[in-house]
Image (cartoon, rainbow, N blue to C red):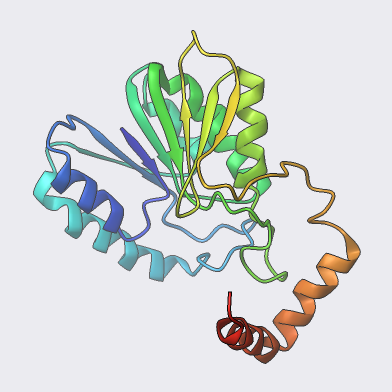
Amino acid sequence: MVEVGVYRGNFASQILRRCEAIEKYYMLDPWRHLDNWNKPANTEDDVFEQILAEARSRTDFAAEKRVILRGKTTEAVDEIPDGELDFAYIDGDHTLRGVTIDLIRLFPKVRPGGWIGGDDFCSTIWQRSTEYEPTLVFPFAVYFAEAVDARLYALPYSQFLLEKDETQPFDFVDLTGEYGDVFLRDQLDPDRLLKVKLLETFPFVKRAGRRIKRLVPR
């Protein structure tokens, strides 16, 4: 399998410990500052050196299975042969640009019958504050699944799972009930954007709303 967006290696460590059947685990991450990535985790190069060292240390117990690919997806993904992967997990650049590149470049690396999973499949594109690029894993992953005629599942905890099965037509299976609208019009509505901005500027309003909601009987 491959994990895109390894960061400190916590996820890799858990998967390698719990899934003994894994024969090869690609860890793909730039581990460097990216000038064109406007997200909170984009820190300085010296910090990323420490983060890479942590990822190595956490997965040293499985060094014989581990393959570290240091680079962006476009720089490193061709180190993986087409059709080699049973599973790919994407937790990297969640912008529209990033998730587009990751899904398009990883799809041929996964064998028929394999899977692509991913994180930050959020029902709102404003996962972070509006000073950062929107998170567009959802709905883009749905559009991608339709383009390649695949079935895609929305899972709890903002996860998605795409089934690469050439016998199954496109289907979006929402197992959470949170993804009724796969369009962007409502999310970009000026009134909704104003509400998001106000809640960022005055966070106490959001906290007060939560307290009131807890007090109201259902």
